[in-house]
Amino acid sequence: MPSLTTDLVRSYLKEIGRYPLLTPEQEITNARLVQQMMTIEQQRQAIALQLNREPTARELATSLGQSEAEVELILHQGERAKQKMVTANLRLVVAIAKKYQNRNLEFLDLIQEGT
Image (cartoon, rainbow, N blue to C red):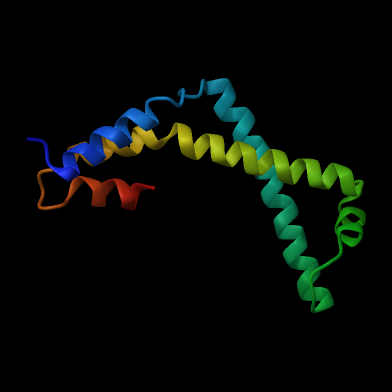
């Protein structure tokens, strides 16, 4: 009879198998979107330090030379790209965790550390 842990692992592996791996081109595209999002977040932090408060959407957009809608779109696309990259790389986490499975570490704990 399979243990609860075995059932959980099997269920998890089945779930992550539903997500397709990214092509190299998709990885590059998503990485660029995430970088653009991070640039905006860094600018937001820099302005917040100067103003001693969070900048408004207009202040942030103006400092970037973009419209508020453009900034919002970049942030949204960046978050989606980040999520796609994380989800697609869960298989890699499992593959690496399997290599360390017999070193007195629980498989689910290894996966948790990798995510």
